[in-house]
Image (cartoon, rainbow, N blue to C red; front, side):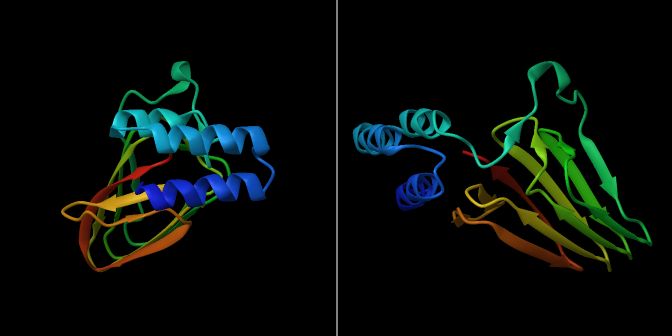
Length: 158
């Protein structure tokens, strides 16, 4: 997450009451003092995350496979996302809502495959995303659609 995204995330946590003034000041101080990505990541991980993390004993050992085939598949509410997740829609449609999902790791490798189908992905506010081959990142909740294309990337809850 770029530094302006981290600052926005901090402001949002404060505005929603997830951190108090002391937590905000500590977060700002940590962001300004951080010299490396690892130090920045540590500061962000010390803050309340926008998503729930799965306890280590419940994490999935194998990649999660989600396929819509010819039909229509919708996943929303509370569900578990593996550290490596493959989703595909051959001719059907797939809608994944990650806003209440529980993540197995801070970084999720999400592999998306779409033939003639369509895929819609909704992620929580405050989570970051990066598509393979780009440096573009998003820090706000977003919806990404994959109509008849192939793509892969990762989601990175702070």
